Length: 281
Image 1 (cartoon, rainbow, N blue to C red):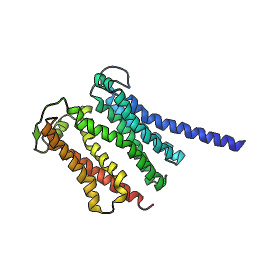
Image 2: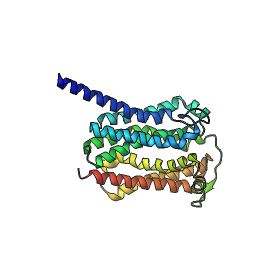
Image 3: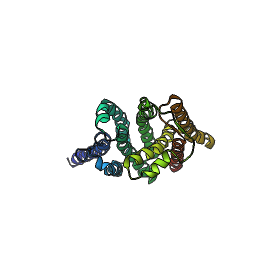
């Protein structure tokens, strides 16, 4: 009887911890947004606080979950399912975000992305401290980025193409640090500008991490790694800027390429760090 009670208590604890992690990811991704009026979850005045919570809530709950459960199978399944669901959710309520959002639907994505990658950071931290096995980490990493691939592809298409169909600019800036970077430096007090510029960098960091999830295990050469994790994002960034200029959909800005390559470089070193950390296991 005592054994049954202990087993039931353990199972209940696992369920509660799983629900806590899921809630800490779902809250920023599905609920946080910005409008000019409304209560905390919606109000524009709380953008900075919501960004902090989007990072800290999933990070803390995921670390606590890993410390108690010491397995990533359920957590990896949550991240595999939540991220495509996030894309479907924002597509379903796209008209709402476009009508009421203080910025636009893409700033809403900042909350979800912070939550998703906070969980990834928690898992990497736990794996570094040998709290989980290398095989468990590899399973989580693959599942995480299979789910994230849906987010990445949707955001890429929207940000670089579909969101610019009604914009006719076709200008070009070839002078480094005089376009997007200069604008960001002059407007650091505005959360929306910070989110946009940081997102430009980190989006391409995630590109390198995504490439590693699908192709990393097949690459042994350092030169090929450099070409894949930095060269490929660089080529994609340049092609995007050229296409924007040719189609007059937006501005072609060398600063965007600089920010994207900075992001790819961060992603490259993150990949090297991950490989070095777990190659000895």
